Length: 280
Image 1 (cartoon, rainbow, N blue to C red):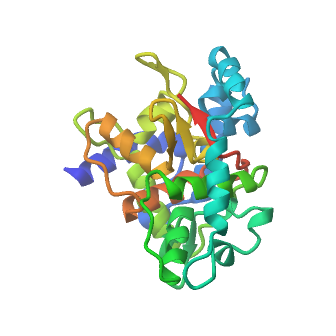
Image 2: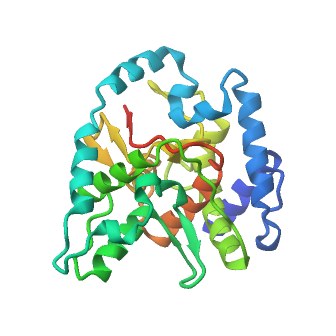
Image 3: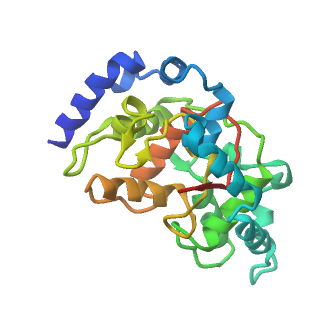
């Protein structure tokens, strides 16, 4: 049943992405072009670079309210906390700063990436915990709290830098395809795929909420959501989306969500980091 759902969703989206769905024939560059062209046609008044602002790139009515919030951003204290945590020494005298050379000039745009040595996709939050564990410290929770604060600090340092995710080699392509399949697969009692909400129905309302375009989704994470009353990571949001379609969420930083982030971020190549952000 799960395989059938993936194939059905892929067949429907084929007309949009204009790329075969078989593993050996997936073409990331074709996907990227198709998604950009699709949204350029769907929202002709929205400049490409403005997609970093998420739903506010297509919703003038609520944009003014959001811009007012951004004058005194609710995530500002989180950036300060992240700064402190990032530079706090471990028991061995080192800190996270030792694991992220060049952070002052921005590193957020370099994640996620495919690590050829381990054949794994490495996200920023995973790298933070890998650093901690390599230095004898306990890992942090992946959805909120300290790890979101640290990620917010690094995202803030990286504002203006452009994403440029690479998909090179068969192993990286397999991860990309896995994330692509996840994005296209219908799931949950509502039988909805990521693409149903954030490609086909982007710009349409679900109750009182306008559905945001997938293009630019990842650029402003971690996000302070009014609904949460706090800052949260991208994988926390993935889990929330799964719950909304009444599907069991995967664990944060699971292979499923890391593959999805790999594909999802690739679709935003060429857009600037502008995290952390504020959303409803």
